[in-house]
Amino acid sequence: MLRRTARRVTRLYDKALRPAGLRLTQYSVLANVARDGGLSISELAQRLEMERTTLTRNLRPLVREGWVIVARGSDRRQRSVGLTQAGRKVYEEAYPLWEAAEKRLRSELGDEADALRGLLDATLARTVVD
Image (tube, rainbow, N blue to C red):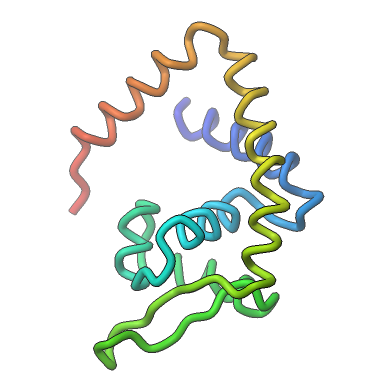
């Protein structure tokens, strides 16, 4: 049931972000990099609760579009992720679309929105994946 719900909510956000040419997963990457630029791939993967290999695969279209740059970090083994000017522009275009989707979802959930957020936060805090 949780996976079905997550897919449906993802579709809601994907539809809202379509005018910016983004999917929710791409928007999430851009938003995190915009907020805390210069993150290593490992740090970004951890924040997104995503495997490094999955993140690397998700970064490819963003790099191809010229929205994200992946450069060597201070350590040769490390890679740093940053936004380009075009990436900043698409993020700024997408943010109001994401915000509208967020408001719509909160409106549809009504009083249960905060309770759901609390339950999801508690689940993340208690769930350990090796």
